[in-house]
View 1 (cartoon, rainbow, N blue to C red):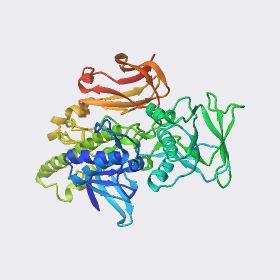
View 2: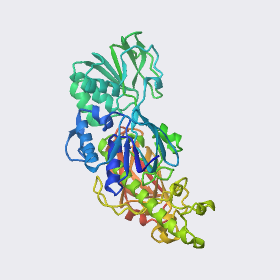
View 3: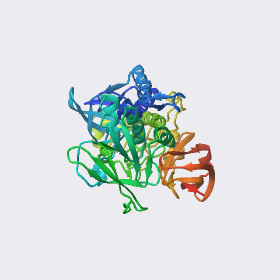
Length: 500
């Protein structure tokens, strides 16, 4: 059986950034498992520009952005396997995968980083009446056909849903000579970025029909047309508002779903709002040593934020592995002097002691170590000590309790979305484990204009930021500092809300 310190599931933008960060944090044994035939993930088919403004301070296309990270993976000598499908991950971080070269194989990891990305919601989830003719595609599938395969799906196009991929494909299909007749959106607001609405629809005269949906599909063998209708506040079609559009192509951009089948099977707790794992300030799930980042955690609006978040996950996973190694050595030394015998013999485990072997991190792995490495993708300073035990009990021996007593006793502060805020990532914070600064990201549930984004420590409002507009299509952020939180030793709940 192969063994690696860190196994990264997914070779897209999140997986690449996480692996690079872990490697630069001092972990040499890192492996990326990617099911596609090349690294880069969805970025390889996103040939439009707009990537990298935050990360590299320049505007790049998707393939250019991906290549920046792929080149670092090559330069750092990080191992990766392509065309490899991960079939299962156990709570003990035993990864089962398969590919054509190696067949079915197992890899034992000390830490796992989940970076599987997300998938598009398909037509089957929409309950649209009508037959299933050719000509109905998800927006991402159409994007791959046009940008990678060089194949046009059709010439007369209607798009349902105003997510960013749908907006971008409205422009892309227009540039390729198709006629995009309308973009229909069920909600009274767009699900995409404002800049994409302007650059992809308004600049090309493509109408955006809010509070509209497809209520019928015409055609048996090939799509012949769709019927749009206005919907009321409950999403029900309004009689008399039906309008038929003759078209040969319907593109669906109706939401993204984090790819968490593997996560759920291994017992990771999920947030029903994001459909992603519940994580703490270290981006660690309820299973010690299992971290999540990128769109598998929650759907992001900008890939730059995916890379930033993944870099933090990589550093935290590296700290976890270092703590495991430290505890293994210390635990073995203590056991070896017990009763004057060595702990390395088989008899020493029979009475329930652990000797620093694989059993030492099975089921109840100790938390991650103090990370003093400063070189990461974002050149961040090292993390503070980590406690990744789910039950909060001590993970090490008395010899190394001195430097970790704070986080062993540390309380977790709950982050609570309220009044317009749908969720927060992370959901809980242990101040003694957090970095000097922590980004709390969230989305709102509606469009709010001339409002304030406020942060409350229990019942005390500690910040109030004026916003001209906040919308569900754009991710928001609140920065918390370690120094600030230490001033509230009895703090139990941090609430983030939208106020008039």
